[in-house]
Length: 605
Image (cartoon, rainbow, N blue to C red; front, side, top):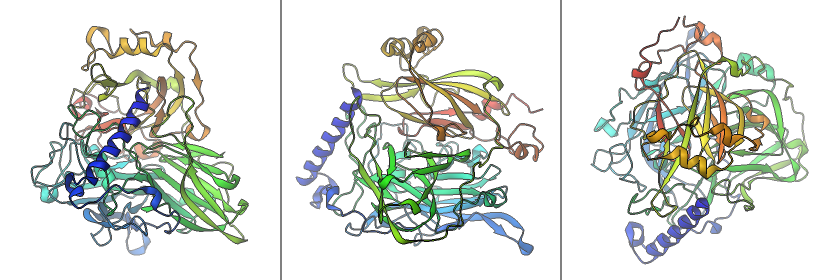
């Protein structure tokens, strides 16, 4: 399969690069530095850190809450990932260079109270990681600095504050993207409480900028509705857990291979990045001392391509209370679950039931995911919990219902059905990828999806690749109604794909290519219970069609009516460059959505 060849190619390139460095080739090789053997790092020697907390709201006289004013910079600094690894040069978010961390500070916002963040770029003229000059990339390499732009993933905000990939800017604004307007963003926080995260979103540089360290957690909290639930609370018992993978050189430097799978087409681009070191909250395989009681973990997979299929040793279970940025209607217990890149799981773990004094959080997901049929992946450790010996009183609880007042999905409310096809193109005569497209169109092609504010749509997302793709839609939330396997996939793919530009000869036309016929008799995949609510990321299996009900209006109608816009958002969605939807694995698979010129012809009643 293509996927196995991808992995073999990556491993071969990694070995080749390591050998070249050993022979003194390249900047690192000149110093005689080699790629680190991850097995040399002892596990569970560093304690799990808590990231700094920035309050996204202010408190006026009399205790009234007012808009928060924050300045968060992107800094070139050093970070210690492991006790026995030299400090690593990183790009990191922080209120100052001295306080910048990987991941960045956790921003805690209050529902209904705006958070205003001025993002500042203090990055150097050159990147610390290799980047591919053949990609449609923000300007880099001309001495003006590293382009960045922050996106609040899961946030509901005007597109001028959404972190559009072409709204990037460099240090001192020496260069800016075509959609740049201001580094000062406003997040209304007029959405239901839940978990979000912020990360770099610069065109063509998203992967390397996040790998360098530009990511952080963000919460929207609502004490009035959350406190009565009785869930574990407080800094000790309610914790963010940010997971990702990295590779290092022996001197501590981050390692990313500088040779692509198709060096004559893409000098550096590889389909996926996998690191041998698993990092949680900025530490490699850390430990956390816990008491015999319930804890809440807001788990984010911030990897580029690695899926985590998480479980706990000793038979402990998770109880899911939220998925991505939205609470579930009811708790869902599981023994394990799959978490895609950019996906979030909000879970409760009760250590009162631990049979031993140590519990390991582990993963057995293949890399790449889902791997070849019949392939069994190794189980790897993520982190360890050291459990206290004495039981104690636990005032927290997990209620039978959580947030049942969310609107129930109803496919009948959809005003249009769209087909969104994922394609992978290869070099003639090989299985090596050259580019990934949505609906056979490049990012710079005209907008084709123009949803109307205040409506819902059915999206039939067709995955014609060999990989599982976590689809993310900005601004909107969606629910997954079903996922079905395609039969005679090659036949359907050949009809759909056509040329790289798509559309020729009736191609990229799911109806004309008989999608329903190819679905007939295909397997129906069960959507896990903890993923049946409203989400902003969904794992679209290879050779399947996922039916999503996408909601282009607030989940909570009061947010819209408070602004006088019935069924709409509390801001002007037509202002600014628009929104995008994309796969959260590949930096090439992104397509614009809701550009202002496409929205300018409608009015809200």
